[in-house]
Amino acid sequence: DAKTTQPDSMESTEGETVHLPCSHATISGNEYIYWYRQVPLQGPEYVTHGLQQNTTNSMAFLAIASDRKSSTLILPHVSLRDAAVYHCILRVRGLGGTGSKLSFGKGAKLTVSP
Amino acid sequence: NSKVIQTPRYLVKGQGQKAKMRCIPEKGHPVVFWYQQNKNNEFKFLINFQNQEVLQQIDMTEKRFSAECPSNSPCSLEIQSSEAGDSALYLCASSRGVAETLYFGSGTRLTVL
Image (cartoon, rainbow over all chains, first blue to last red; front, side, top):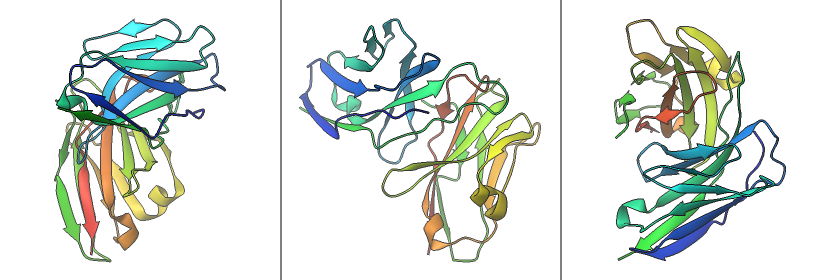
């Protein structure tokens, strides 16, 4: 899995919309962009993923640049429960056989203040 | 809330002891991954299964760990002889297919004294 770059940390206030950036300049055409988040003493929680088109679900909106070299996870109206380490990961699509391991980096720690 | 169930949540062992942890994957998920997350929050892939068959594993897992995913029973990961460096959060994840989204359990926190 190719490398991604995220800021070490970001700060926000409850109710704000947060934009979490991720750079993946060497992404291949067959790699999905995955986002997970993790709070202390828990496993990573799946947030969203996308290949080329922007995607949205109940948790977040994923904006993918047209050249796919960067993406932004947008969290609308954050609450204290959104405070977590957010991981942006690339994963090869459509692998048969052994499957594709997720390669986690350190992620970006999001702090949410009341 | 995660549908991948890991037990126990906490495990304390002495050096040289066996340490066994279990994972019940989400219903309908034949693929299971195990990861180790250390104190620096770094993840290490350990092994993955499709049904009862091992797909991939790292050298460390092959030499020092025993893992299985029997049919109709929880998957398990066992360290044969625990070392201090094995203290970590062990995460199990499952998916519908080898290239599908992984869903993680809450982990087993192992402390080796």
